[in-house]
Length: 364
Ligand SMILES: [Zn+2]
Image (cartoon, rainbow, N blue to C red; front, side):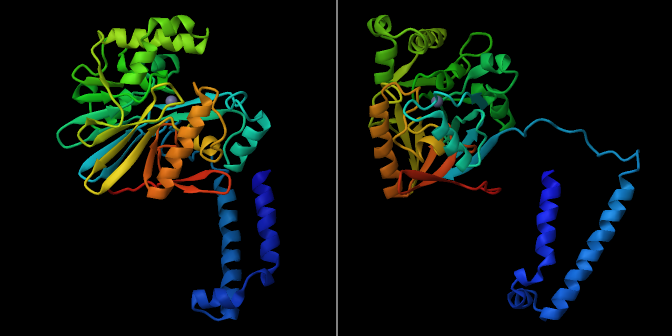
């Protein structure tokens, strides 16, 4: 039906040649107005001839495509430079979430309208996950892990793709020297544990925000936690870091975690949530973690609160402060839940901000 409608609209256009600015088109074509019209008629009749030929071909029963339908995406990794550093963004896949109740202070209709305005599906919210590997020339640093091997099994490969996509990028988990965690939500830490329950990054030092560690590993806090998701996060933190034998290095904010990687306190989404500035020479990028979750919702509407924000009021204050800084500094942001490869500039709008995604660059 849609194709027929498009053909009809196109025909209406072609029936009204006065719709076109012939003088301008003729100038563009380097031809006279009349010869353009003749040529155009020629093209149209040629098109009709092609359609006839196509119709004849479709009766052939032996015509097949040269390859089966792939039904599978290409391995997802993307590289860019920050000074002397090379960043590889690795997709861990994407999960569909119910739209209902994802934003605690907007109605489902408002959220669906925001998705529709951005030409996104409105029946479910697609949430992508994009950890990054930084090659400093002397170290391979992973920032956040994705959902891990167990999620890959459970989701039949929808998420937990990090390990296979890392391999496709020519790297192995055993190559990673350091893993730096932004916060203890499952999509950022569960990949620390391999399918066999052992550490997924056997040669890596694991860096965690000191404030996050202090909160989630505190038995008193756990005893006071509301049942459900928050209680689950306390238990999950014990499971994940227990599997590492407690071998972690807490880091303080507003200091370098590793050379070129400075942690910034960005609390709200979780108590000890941290972001990072990665810099080399004159170049830098802000690695935000979950300061803003899905950008078409929370960058466009910084006052909207994600229901997964632990302290939504603090999260909003952090988000506005960070995004004002990104705009003022014209600074690139790497967003864990941005559309892959999750790298963007941001601009201010009347009601919030807008992400301008960096185009895929086939060269580095
Ligand atoms: Zn997240």
